[in-house]
Image 1 (cartoon, rainbow, N blue to C red):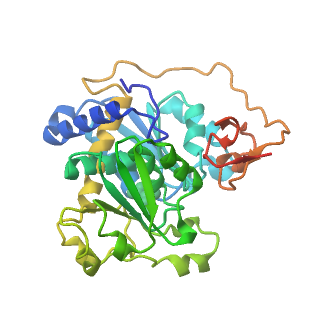
Image 2: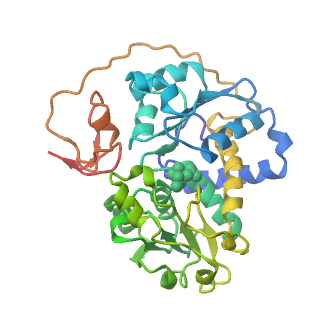
Image 3: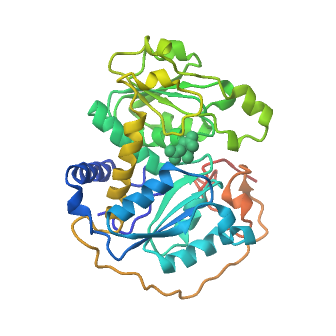
Length: 367
Ligand code: NCD
C-alpha cells in the first residue's frame, strides 16, 4: 500500500495508512523474529548533512534488524556537498546504489528536492527548521500507546516553536483528528511560523490558543510537548543565550499538571526538563525515543513493500536523460533565506496555493 512512496510531509500518508503502520510496529514489538530477514539484500542509504544521534542510529538499527544493509554519511563534510554538488545530483547517484534513502539537511525543502530526483523512496529525517515527519510517527505512536486515541486532546507545545521542526510536523499531523486544541507556549520571538497557524485555522476540528506562561498552561493540557531552543538555527548567539532557558520543566511545575498528563520531548534534552521530572510516571520521553526504532522498522518495511515477506521488486533502473537546466532569469523567488531554492540557484521555483506559497518550504513567495 505504501510501497514505493516517499515520506516528506507528516501528512503524506492518510490517517488509515498511519494506523496500518502503527499496527505493524505493534507486531514488530510483539514478535520481532518474524521480521528479522525481511529486508535481506536491500540497502538503506543515510544522507545526514546535519548532526543526529537518535534519528540516524535508529534508522540504521532498524534496517540492520530487518536483515538489510546500510551505507551513508553522517555529516556533510564527508560527502561531495563540500565540493559543491547539488542535492539533486547526490540523490541521483545514491538511488543507483541503494533501495531506500533517508535524508537530513539544513535547507528547508531539501528532502522534497531529493524526492523529485530520486528513483527510490526518500524519507525526510529533518529539513532545516521545516518538517521532521519520522519524529512525528514516533510522537503519534507514543500518544496512541499512552492515551489510546488522537481525538479530543489538548496539546501544549512548549519552547522553540519557530525553529522546532518536530513541532511543525506534529501540528500538521494532529490537525487531521477531531477536536484537538493546541496551546502554544513560547516567547514571542519563538512563536510558530505563519504557515503552521494557517494549517490549524484550516482544520475544521482544531483550534489553538497562545499562552506564554507554562505554570498556567500546564494545568490545562493532556500532553506537554517540550522542545529545546534550537541554537544552530539562530543568526545571533546573543539572542540564543537570551532565550535558551525560557522554559524549564521541573517537579514543582509538574504538581500543577493533570494526573494523566504525559510529557513528550523529541530529544535531545538540553536544559528544559530537570532530571527530577524523569522519575515522574508521566514523563514518557525515553520510551518515546525507544518507540522510534520500531516505527522506523515499520516504515522501511512498508516503503519497500516487505511487510509480508522479502520484496520482489528490484532496483536496476537506468537514467534516460538528465537535464540540469539553470533557473531562468525569472522574477519570483522564495522569501525564506533558508529555503533550498535560495541555496541551490539551479532549482526551478515551484509554487502551490495559487502561486503564493513555496512548494519546497511553505514560506511566502514574493515577486
Ligand atoms: C529533533 C530534530 O532533529 O529536529 N531531534 C530528533 O530528531 N529527535 C529535535 C531537536 O533536535 O531538538
